[in-house]
Structure formats: structure tokens, C-alpha cells
Image (cartoon, rainbow, N blue to C red):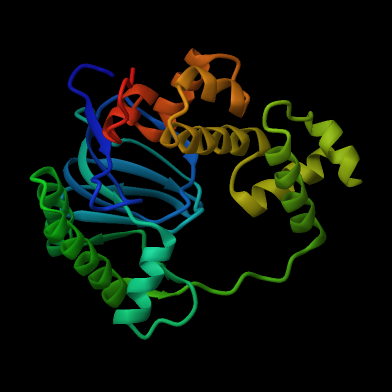
Length: 277
């Protein structure tokens, strides 16, 4: 990492499935990617520029950034000194459970706003981190649920139903399935479009419209996601790299660190995996 940068991404055994990230990034740039669950990030210093489908959000101290599942986004420093934040990544299942218990939201819960000035929510996010670091899983779990409930009650609503699928959207979904099947040996855009009975540029447009990024960018993100699951199951980084289709471990390390925010070795240590390197 660049001088002055630091990051810790980890899980507490008492909060299964919840990633916690505290970091200061200066030169680090997150490429376009998405998450299976939700993102709640409390900015405490500097400015984070978050690139979303609707434009760039400039998030400063006191701001909480909320990102729904599978929304493509980028992140980078908005000022030379970078940004400092505490982030929580609860699963879609947990947020749906909290929404059903504490709100009148029916359907898939989500947030129309990406950034809100909410000092209390930011405090709660930081308190979750503090409690987890002190080994107090009861307090961490309680404050996590209080924070999510607060955000849903103040800013949440049911996400709009997905529009009927067009032929282009169906082709994009079929292309995604083919890329998932052939992650280690993906077809070219031409071969993919030939198989689907469309043209390369039509498929490229349809894929971007459906997933917010071109197929090759989506594939890199998908490979890193699968690598995370393999690392979680105890697979060594070198083996995981080959299994997901990267040429070698340095190739995995580079993309993993850019998208996840820490390299594979630090990721494994944050999960308490013995022998992590």
C-alpha cells in the first residue's frame, strides 16, 4: 500500500458472514465492482468519491454511504490526503430479516439515496467495529441491527420490481451464465455473441445495461468473488488463483487487492485462517 495507507478487513466469529473494514486509502482506487450484500460506510476523514450509475458521490466526514446489492460502483480519493472510513457489509438475508421485523417495507428492501449526513448512524457503525475489536459480540451484533433498522426506517423503501426482460437482457443473462461456467477459459466476445445469435456490440451494450459493466470487467469481479469463497474454505491463494482462471498468484493478488481493498494474505488473516501468507 502507499505510504499512509492502512486497512483491516476481517470477520468476528460471533458475527458470521459480516465483513468489517476499517481503512485509510490515499492512492488506492477500487475498480468497478459490486457486492452480493449491502454496504454501509461511515466516512470519518477526507473525501471518498464513489462512482455510481447515476454519477459520482463526494462523501465527506459525517456522511454514511449506502449501496444496494449488485450495484456496480467505483471508489477513489476525492482529496490528496485520501479518506478514512469504517464499513459494514451485512448480507441481503440479514437486511431482509431486519426489514421484515422492524419496518413496513414489503418486497426487497433498498435505498434510493446513496449518501446521507447521519452522525448517529456513523457512530453506530464505528461502535460495531469497536465492540467487535473488544471481543464483545453481543454489543456488536446489537448495534449492527440497530444501525440497519435505523437506516431502513429513515431512508429505506422497497426496491422497484425489475422491468420485463428484453431480448438483450436475456442475452446478457445467458452470457453471464456462460462466463460463470467457463471462468477458467472464457470465450471471446465474438464467440460469445455467435453462440447467442447476436452481434458483439449488441451483446456489449446489453451486458452493460444489465450489469453496469462490460463482460470482461464483470468476469474479473466474479473471479475475485469466487476466490474469496475458496479462501474462506481454506484453499491456498496459489490454488485459488488457478481455479478461478487467473494465470498465477500475483495476477490474483493484484486484482484481489484492487477490488477487495486488502491482498489475499491479509484477507485470510482477517478470517483467522492459520498459515495465511
